Length: 240
Image (spheres, rainbow, N blue to C red):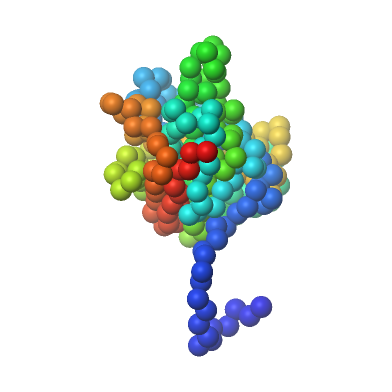
């Protein structure tokens, strides 16, 4: 392969996303991390990050249809998120050193089944975050990986989510309770962040669950999550 410019032109049939399930050994997700989202839930600001996980099988491509299983179709929701890709193994690191372990950032959508997350008859007495967000392809990513040399700590990035062209979420990473450095350092305490693993940093206010009336996703709906300086991930929901 050569990195030298030429006059040669190639037609791109399909632009593939930057990561596949085989590239990502583990996905850590941060719940209730944007002040605007915490306020719409009626909760208090957290004193430390809330962490849950998704398997690598949730990773999907930008422009890929997201299969919504039959058990998760009644309250399908979106969550636009900034995602951190870990570049090398990290354990017990400080916030000051955190960016040394960040390979890049990308855009993600933490697709969620709210009934399996919140309803006592399905989720039990406490929120069930992992199962409700871990169906296959429930973490579409894209369209590119942007390094810390470009975005630094990514602490001033705009984030917008659209459903069928309608603006649903409009936030900024400056609204995060715990930013990139704090999250990477916290998640590395006593456990190894493997190279290739991902941290989804949370979502701002405007999710379908708290709209009046509620704005859950339906078969064929298109969701676009766009973050300034990175790009947009575009996916259509496909009810099975």
